Length: 163
Image (cartoon, rainbow, N blue to C red):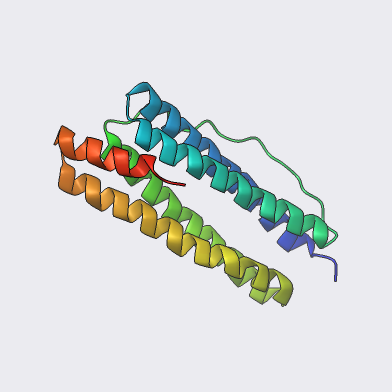
């Protein structure tokens, strides 16, 4: 069955959202790189790649269902933050927003009786649980660290080991 126009348009908006997410994480990587937090930069650069992968997963799915991908402009993300906590708090808030978008897509797929898209989105629902958990855990650690540079550099080193 060919994808409906409603689902196609919604998935295209999600591609744009995933690419914005990638752009946001790349901006964060750049910010951290310029502030000598190489581990935070590494973590965000990895996240940049993950978000691109999410966009490509949707891209492929649209074509697999006989649809057409339509790309829109990507807004420029914020470039500076007050602290690592400020940046990761923004990342956590952003991931919560993306979770809401994914849940709305699931609801649309149900309303449209598009079981294939609903099943396809299951992966994203599970992925968002993981994304929120990772961001929240980092925010919690940074909240405990406060302004303690030793603690910040320990967290930085930990995030630098992300594979």
